[in-house]
Image 1 (cartoon, rainbow, N blue to C red):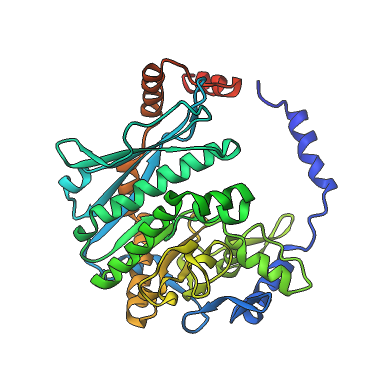
Image 2: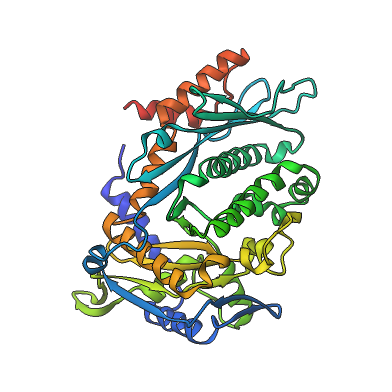
Length: 425
C-alpha cells in the first residue's frame, strides 16, 4: 500500500514544528567566514590539522572546455575491490570474500582478467581451523587467492572480516600489477585504508587487536610500500573518494569557534563553499538557483586530522616503518564540486607526489577532465568497479555454495527474507 494523500500531508506538516536554525543565507555566510579565517591553517588543540599545500583558493573551469583539454597523463589505470559483504552462518562462521581488479585505458585484456581474491573467516569455535593461509595461484596462474582466519572480537566480527578482506585484496592486487602502470593509478576510494585506521579510536578491543595481531598492520604496510614504490618510479597515484564522509574539519571548526558548524560532515561544508548561483524571485519569495555550467574546486590541502593523523609527519603509522621522510606520506587532497548532479568528490594523494607544483596542476586538470567527461567519477574508476564488483546473483550463489561446503545455512533475519522476496517482484 502507498500513503494516502491525507497521511502524506499529515506527515509533511510535522516539518512545520521544527526550527531548523539559521537560514540558508546565514549558513553560506558562515561557510565564507570559515574559509577566510580558519583554514589557513586550521588548528586543533594547538596542532595544525589542515593547511594549504600552496595558496588557499577556489577555482572554476567550464565543463565543456576542460573536457576538450589535452590530457596530462596519456594512460590511466584504475583499481577497485568488491565484496559479498559479511555473511553469518548458523555454525558460527562469519565470512566475507573480496576480489580486486585493475582496469586500464587503453584496455589490457590480460590485466583485466587478473584477480586477487581474499576470504576472511571468523569463528568463536576453538576447534575451527584454516589448513593453509598462504597465497596460491588459480585461473591459469593469472590470479591469486588466500584465506585468513580471525579469532576473538565476536562483537566486531563482521566489520573486521570485511575490512581485512577488502583492503588486503586491494593492496595486494596493486602491488601485483604496479609495474603495469606507466602514467597514473587511480584507486577507487581513499589513499589509505580508512576503515582499518579508524579501529584505533573506535573501541579498546579493536585498538588492542591492531597492536596484537600483525595482519592489520601488514595491510597498512602494503599501502605504505605502495606509496614508496610509486614515488621511486615517479608515477603518481591518487585515491578518488566518491562519497567523502569525513568529519575531522567540521569537528575542528566547532572546537575552534564558539559557533556551531551547521554541517553534517566536511563534504557539506565544502559544497556550500563551492556551489555557485543566485537567489531569484519565486512564487513563495526567493529560491536559490544553482549555476551548472562550471566545475568548481579548491586548492590542495595537507590533512593531519582524524584518520589521516597516523600517516602524518607526527603520526606513528601504527608502527609501520617508513623509508621516506614521514611528511612524504601525509594525505593531501582537493575537492571538486559537480553542480550538474550536486555532488562533491575528494581526490587524495601523498604529499611526496603533490609537493611538486607542476605535478599538482597536472593531476588537477586530469581529474577535472575525468569528472567533466564522465559526468561523475572517472571512467577508469567505473571500469575497475565493473571488473571487481560481485553482483547480487553472484553473491547469492556464492553464499549458497558456502552453505553446501560448510553443511550449514546462512543465519537469516526476517528483513533479509523480505528483501529477497521484494527483489523478485
